[in-house]
Length: 274
Image (cartoon, rainbow, N blue to C red):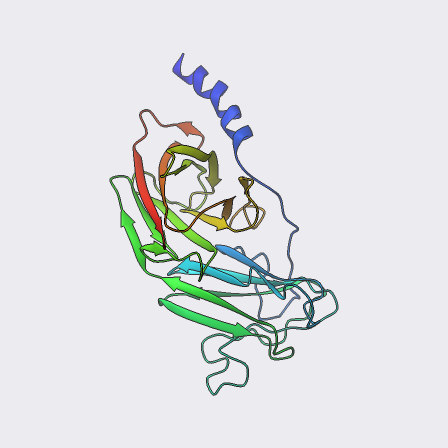
């Protein structure tokens, strides 16, 4: 009877999983860019990025991620070469931390870099030096009974500095083998009202869950992702406010398509700046 129940419930879980597909990405053979790279977080070089009056050049322009996050930049500005170069334009240390070199956009090209040290990393395009953006990296971490949660913003989420923050949720009760599906049940509550803002199931292929909270882009709560077809960050967009707290509860409810009896729940209370 228990096995039959698993077979009945799992399709429902899969149907509830938040997921959008993305275009497959290919690099030219023999280039410095890996074919099929799938990091933790995707940043796009948007169409029209070479134009000064474009609303965005890199999108998102400011991100906050935990240490050991691999960011992948995708050049989607068809026909326009660009770079992803660390530092301020023209600075003496320009490109000393990371530098993509020239990224042609056809076929789509990408560059990836893993941030292993906490700090703030401005970057720009050497060809179009008015195109600037930044990555903020934190080594802050919450340790719970069943999960470790790394927080890209540090202990307090500064909404003024970073309207987006990436969490990396690592379970202690599941084997992270890189291919066995793990279903995470995540609930975000508004600490002021104790109301649930979002509750959903997010799956990874045997990896920790990268989950970004996004504020300031409309009051409607929605979830989307992952960034790549089978990997990368999921995103929760909602009306996160300054001077508030947001309890985030996490469970692993299935591993390798098998339901877990009595899954352990951990709750992390994320504070925002006044």
